[in-house]
Length: 311
Ligand SMILES: Cc1cc2nc3c(=O)[nH]c(=O)nc-3n(C[C@H](O)[C@H](O)[C@H](O)COP(=O)(O)OP(=O)(O)OC[C@H]3O[C@@H](n4cnc5c(N)ncnc54)[C@H](O)[C@@H]3O)c2cc1C
Image (cartoon, rainbow, N blue to C red; front, side):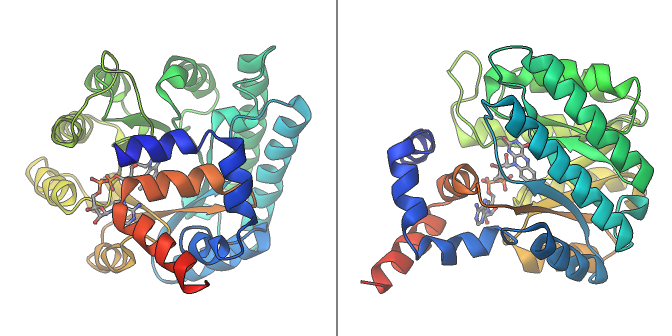
């Protein structure tokens, strides 16, 4: 209930303006967001890479309705990739980028698919030249088909383009089977959005079960699974499954969000696993923050305590 109410709030412009204008929000945001500028994101990336972690950087923003804004987002990514390359952080995919298709135009009223295809192609070209990769985030259930179509088209030129499957959707095991092919980089997450009952699974237990099912399909296949979860049970199952299928540590990776379970991130990196941190930056952090609060009541409590302490 609380999760649904919070996710619904993420679409309210009134609440958004109120929360973004509250000074204390910034302290909470700082826990999950690396900063407002590319320079701040680069500094955190440098520290994480020096500490043995991999990084995927997200320039915050989504649901772009203006074609010029979509172009600006793509330009920002290209500039960021140039800075990563100059700093020696891009090589071997140490730091890559994550892109939301609707941030680069997928949701535009006219020619959304074509615009997103063009911009992601530009970003993927810059990434390839820098020795790194791009992963397309997955957004709400209504975007899944269009996003997977984009992935299919773009992979003809950029076979290492990563995509995301969310285990809260009924369809995901079938999508995993289609995507579990050689060289295919697939991030598996539980999903941070809501879907109607005929499309999405209702209970956490079902979502978890589907996660384990999808993970098995991906780990059994010849692709490159990227297991994005903070859930200790899923991480345990992944370790056991990787062991029984004889997967080398370099043939898959764990992924976690910046600011969440950093000690577990460090532990996995220290035992030789590939551990990638999803690192968001930018000023458009509202939707991202609300999804993090909705995932975990204690984050909401942290936020409310911070608000209360300023009164
Ligand atoms: C690298 C990465 C990329 C992602 N990309 C996408 C995407 O493209 N599309 C999409 O829909 N979703 C994406 N997500 C979000 C994901 O779908 C989940 O909403 C989120 O990861 C929480 O699920 P969980 O697997 O950690 O399990 P949960 O069952 O939610 O949590 C398990 C445990 O993890 C810890 N935890 C989880 N969330 C939090 C939190 N917010 N704060 C503090 N502790 C927490 C707690 O210990 C909790 O008990 C991504 C997540 C990661 C890690």
